[in-house]
Amino acid sequence: MHDAERALFDLRQGRSVHVAATGEPGALIASVDGLTGAALETLRGEGQLRLVVTRHRATSMGLVPAAAMEGARGMSLSLNGEGPERILHLAMAKGRFSVDPRDVRPATTVEVGGLTLARLGRLLPAVVSVTTDPQGSRTLRDGIASGAVLAVTSARIDEMAGNVDVRVTQVSEGPVPLAEAEYARFVFFREAHGLLGHVAVLVGRQRDWPDPVPVRIHSACLTGDLFGSLRCDCGEQLRGSLRHFAGSGGGLLLYMGQEGRDIGLANKLRAYTLQEHGLDTVDADGVLGFGADEREYVAAVEMLKALDVTRVRLLTNNPAKMEALRAGGIDVQDRRPLYGTLNRHNLPYVKAKMQRAGHWLADMLAGTPAPK
Image (cartoon, rainbow, N blue to C red; front, side):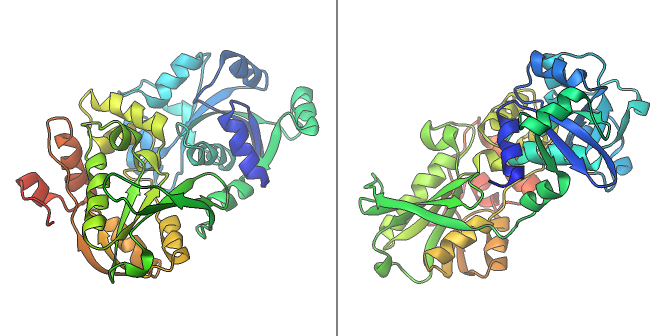
């Protein structure tokens, strides 16, 4: 296993990892997500603790003007004896924070490496860091030597994060009759690094599919798809696309493991809590330290190619999906809108998608039904 992948696994398990970089001191890093008092005390034994957050989070905290973070990939601020709950509050709560500007600086290369690991692990993008001297304490040296503390370089983390050549492997498949489409097959794909799995749902016999092939790229939404949450229109879009495939001679749904625009279920639920206090979906994600949309569609492109689908009619309201497929060499011949039903719970969400993310939803907000 790649050492950066092992470091990601350790961070998700609540263990600290040591990140090193050429030309600067290393740092012992732990995720704020799931941080325990015992882990915090272990870190304090190595020196002065710092909280490292993304620039999105730093802006929402009011720590420094956005212009002052030009080029910075994260910000680092001193901690002064706070416990796990207070640190979690600093890392994710809405509001402005009184922090001495002298205690705030751009994150170092190794601190950014820790942030990157947290982000890849769908954890809250915030870490606690303590700078280590070249030798470190005897406890740290012994931990690294024994393997109890994993050591990884920031270069290896960046290599893993920057690998845009996502490879997907077809793992298994089987028939799954659906209420909307009795003849359907599920094909499970796994990304090469093992972090995400995706499912292709083939409706109808592939040899009988229309040309171009109707395709829906659908990001997983546990709350909407399974439980029928009224906060979003995801479940209706999912079932509407399957009905469209069944009624038009077949089609392909790519069900991507990108919950909450790829921030993960735990962070999506945190964002929901922030939305209860008046934030829209984009600003809520920003408060947590994420960008407006963290999704990539390289895996979707590779799944289409693996299934020998190169000409598509895309069921989407999202221009980014069309652009991503075309950039990946897929011939997007046409687009079909796909709407859910507006209600008082999802109206702010739909408005934010149109006004903040540029989704084609004006007709839906005007009450115009999508074409059958």
